Image 1 (cartoon, one colour):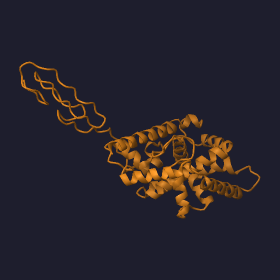
Image 2 (cartoon, one colour; image 1 turned 90 degrees about the horizontal axis):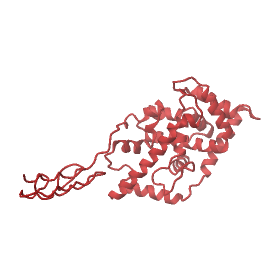
Image 3 (tube, one colour; image 1 turned 45 degrees about the vertical axis):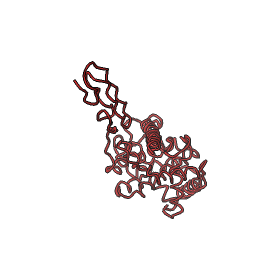
Image 4 (cartoon, helix red, strand yellow; image 1 turned 30 degrees about the vertical axis):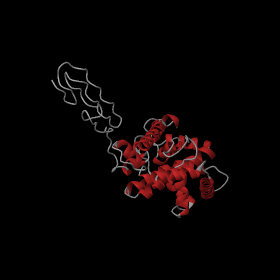
Length: 301
């Protein structure tokens, strides 16, 4: 069980680092001017698109997300998705993330916001790359150092994706939204049954939440990476999860407390090294002494 938990934590750290690397590099990757805050859907969508979720047997950076695609399909199956046009507009205006921030205890809203943000990002970056870059240009013209409103975000999206087409704006929106929805619902995971079974096993063993004492990893598990966002909208949704702390090593045994093991006795026989805690180094035995009694954690003088 300990090996399984360690493996899970390793996966979580990998997912965290890949997510952080993407979001911190956003201004450079997207050629956004300094001070322009990317919308939450864009920030999270790209972070999810270039990170590998836990429970994934192989690297999936830039591919179909093994966590969010099943969620999207389940939302559709349960009739929890809005009409495609409404859903697309709600994503690109950060409406879903604002809802999740307002009702931060509702995990279903968080899942919906994250899955749809990834889905729209995944679709647009593959099917409409040129328009996507136009969208970045439009964002670059927005005011600095402030959270953009829904109207401002919608205006950027309109100018990049809907205007100047050989159809009305309403028809362009409808066609784009329907294409996105069909694209995601028809997408397939490589080894989908494997991913599904892995996640079920994690839940059965209690590894999806875990009893980890590492507060950063615990918060990341709950937030699925959102905790590292620079967006105040996303940060608001995690205000009950932002307890960041260092990892706590377990207590050593047979020689003293702590991850470093027991202290050797002074002048006695070599003391017994402490049992290493989580991530700790084993205790070092003491040097042999002279005439004193055998040394343990508190050896003879």
